[in-house]
Image (tube, rainbow, N blue to C red; front, side, top):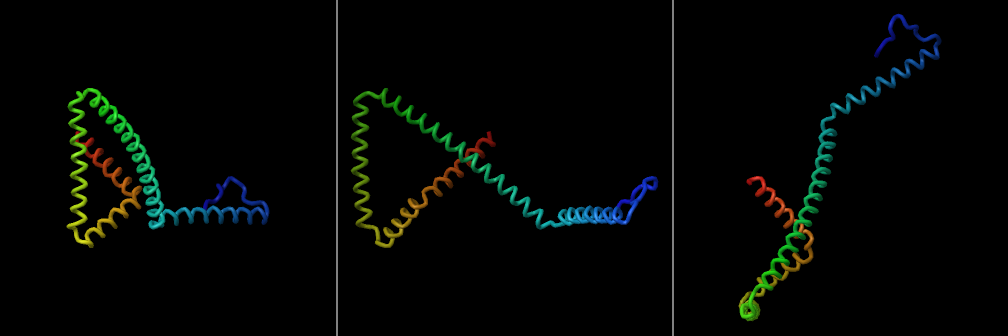
Length: 160
């Protein structure tokens, strides 16, 4: 508690003295609350953890947006380069590529047929379940893949 300097008059009446006492009590209560808040380590740690979590979520959103933009740019660039390469190919090479693609499709169909014939039912069932789970959680898989790619790019960038 602070006391008024000796040259200042104290309360003139009992009512003023009560007001001063009440004001001093209020100030003292606020000071005690502030000190108690500073000593509550658990509450401060929770508050800091919440702040860090919020910052991490914001940074993750920012990185996700950057990755999506970069992926779009790369996709457009790849499509452009593919069209340029196709335009430059002579017709005999294009025909051979079409034939090779057709052969690959035929071989893939045969491989699928062999898979159906030779794979035990339990393995096919588990594989089907895994594929369905992946389709059902496509967004989670895409986010995880995006995070992995961003982390890989960031690590690669740091090494350079």
